[in-house]
Image (cartoon, rainbow, N blue to C red; front, side, top):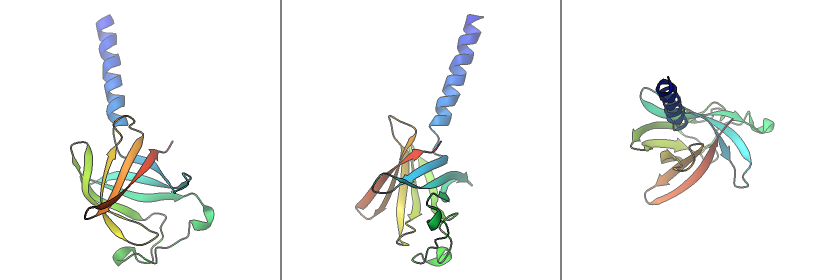
Length: 141
């Protein structure tokens, strides 16, 4: 009986750890001062990872449109915008995608990965050539 109980505990623990390692879910995007300005929802679609602006926290910014964006995103509302596209899993990272900065309208190549020590921290890197910027997002409750 003890072996069965131990086995059940191990299975439950491993399942919860596997779930915690998942990049999908809602993430807090913070500004330079560390204040949360939006919630980004990361989800899987057709085997790839995408992200959209789920909520802008500042009420007066919720109706903002992306005037600087190009293509299909031009003059679209930022809240609800799919700003991260096409990431594919490669080991512990998701790579070969793109991310748009709604403030500038610029599109960057993108990769994301969970922090090795804390699965509630997501590293988001946008880059052009050898230049890059990495932001830290925290899992939203």
